[in-house]
Amino acid sequence: MVSVDEKLEPIFQEVLRRNAGEQEFHQAVREVLESLGRVIAKHPRYLENALIERICEPERQIIFRVPWVDDQGQVQINRGFRVQFNSALGPYKGGIRFHPSVNVGIIKFLGFEQTFKNALTGMPIGGGKGGSDFNPRGRSDGEIMRFCQSFMTELHRHIGEYTDVPAGDIGVGGREIGYMFGQYKRLTNRYEAGVLTGKALFYGGSRARTEATGYGNTYFVQAMLATKGQSFDGKKVVVSGSGNVALYTIEKVQSFGGKVMAVSDSSGYIVDESGIDLALLKEIKEVRRGRMSDYLRAKGKGVYFVNADAGSIWDVPCDVAMPSATQNELTGKDARKLVANGVTAVGEGANMPSTPDAIRIFQEAGVLFAPGKAANAGGVATSALEMQQNASRDSWTFDQTEARLATIMRNIHDACAETADEYGAPGDYVLGANIAGFVRVAQAMDALGVI
Ligand code: GLU
Image (cartoon, rainbow, N blue to C red):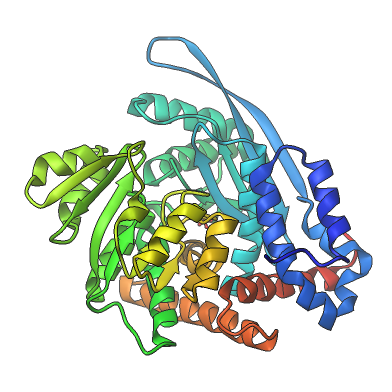
């Protein structure tokens, strides 16, 4: 069992005390602190000036009321959040999540992770995250628009292309970004394209942004497999989730010759023995905004559906697991099952989808394990490419943008692997990602003085 170094333990205890009840935030901080023992042993100067304490404390946290009127004329109230975690490397950058589970602890864990992830991309972006406990499921287009407008009516005073640049996350895609951008433009009377990323192509978006997180995770796992002389070709793959991360993971895995056996949403999972039919899945998820059972109805033969409360997608045997739904979706029990079924690699498309137990089980079993803050960084990296295009009033081709993404993912992979080697833990991508991300943020913070 990994533990927090005794010099760092008081810092962790203080995080627990000051952020009581925020379990996901505790989990994210603990994982990073567990990796930092080796860094402070080598570079004790990082213990000076309360640098690590400052890294664990968001620079600013904004919580606000979001009132809106539903289709029945009833006033609804939600809570909005933006946690501006760290701006040592650039403007705060990170998505907005609309999901009923959202609370300040979840946004803080996401903002904390984002800080190191963004540093790993090598792009000039700090870390932040936002969201609301608004549940978009079953809401009409008009309701979504009014909610987004109300959310932005407050948020607009805290963001800007040099201050904080939000994007999408769970429950926030192109449609929601459009409504938020429209309201920002109206309130500020500025066409400030670089204030939000994930925009549609026809008003300042970047090619390959929608695909980037899933493609990026696939590139990362490809690089990891290559270190063992392996590839995706002929491998059985299970991808949880069915948002843009999952859909474009499936697309890339299939183009690399992998066979995707199963996919899920919050209602349950489907297994398709002949390999997931991506065109059908995209139609159901991107056009109809439908459910997994629609896939079963459309395809029938060779397909089965398991209800979310009747089983876990990780029961499906595979060589590569790519959890791309949400935090803590893959438990220790799931990891044991995957290992028993012979899994050789795991690439996290979602943020913190594996529990600490699951990570330990994978690592002890010698499974190649790519943590989300490295493996899913392709989305935010391409957001930074969108910011670059906006700043230069330019628009790149798909191939040009994807080539940049592929290079960034290769660099992140190599930085994690080399850092793990340097710190005496070859093959430990968790340690490599945490240390490489931390050092970049810490160096910048050190240079900027105590702020
Ligand atoms: N929500 C995504 C993430 O977790 C993307 C953030 C962005 O593009 O700013 O990294």
